[in-house]
Length: 111
Length: 112
Image (tube, each protein chain N blue to C red):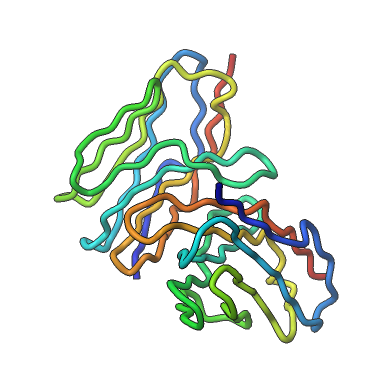
């Protein structure tokens, strides 16, 4: 099955700096790559996603890039704010609809 | 609009007791359904997913099972709980195709 690796496991940045989280996947048939944000004790919620026919997608301060050849994708958050502090998960879905997640990155934005 | 219901929100069960967690989706038909487990401070582990009634794919061998008796109902069960079954269980649904998954509120299970 699909194996999704996510790095780093923890990330601390100063407010206003950028944060980058990287993921790799193993199944070359995977075609959908969402990113979720999970605040403490709550359900994960989608923040951005990218499909395999696109190399980059941006939504305000958040961007995601995808390199299908290398089978890796990254989340970029610019101008970070304290409310960005949360656990972020990447995921990959293959054609069989299994949606596998990375182990998560705990992001802390300090004022 | 679509909604997902998952209950109970919290559950404390003794070791060796059975388990049944239920998840239902409203406002859509023929969704993909998923069960995930999140241990404390850990990632989201895919346990089961289903693309249709009676169709269950298991990702991790364990003492849990899943069933989909109706199109929008997904049940996670165990005959005998282990201490290691403690965790935060999340149900999710998605449309067919390349779309996002929506999560339920989750059930925090503590096995004592």
